[in-house]
Length: 349
Image (cartoon, rainbow, N blue to C red; front, side, top):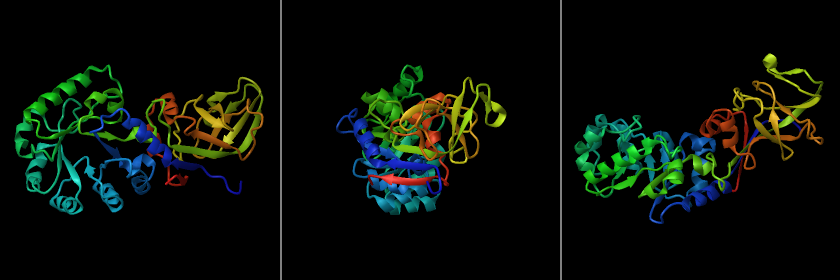
């Protein structure tokens, strides 16, 4: 150990394997859109584009600048999923052959000027009440009801298949689909939608978090390993308090490893005592409050633990979902909050 630092190691073979596992749930005719918004959920937009372009049918982005980076690295279809809002932006996506979404009737006048030159995805508000045109406004988009365009919606509760809102959204979408005379292609499902409602896969699915192993499915692996090294080990008697605020107290004589990572690296400051980590391939727990640069870990049962050993905060062997659930967080947030001071390494590009 010359100079310790937290590391993020991303294995794109795991991402590709996750994609192949997800595809097993899809009908053969269904197209797979890999969503790589927010810097590919923290996995690096440009690198991710090149690493998975052979196993996806297209890409989904949110910001136009993301779509332009993808276009520089792939000729496959790209969808700007939250639309564009000016004639300059429309001219640019026309030039770069980027698809776009219309989700509001306020976008209609400008979109109509380009309807013969672009592929449009018309987004319905079927019950999520975030983005999407109202069901009773659909007839105003009749000129977009062509076999090259796509009718889409987004599920609010796909991660909870028993939620009644799912059926409401499917029914609303089906009724609208009948209204457009079945001229358009269809897209409803996100990652959890594919896992819980594959019968609604239709023409395109839009899969993001599942590609990176960020949902709980046995055959999916967390593709990023977030780790750092131990820089100190404290031997403490029973009853001694640990860290800021002294939140945690040893219940017995204990060995506490101090890991060179904290919330400035992207590990949540709100992490609870008992959050799992791996040290020398053995499962143990965080004890005490996470600080800006340091995390305290109980290594009392890991006799060979020493300064310089690695502590994995999540990895293919310790699912990011497990620690997200423990702390009432979501894996999306953990992936996208890794800071720039963390050293990044990429495998199997």
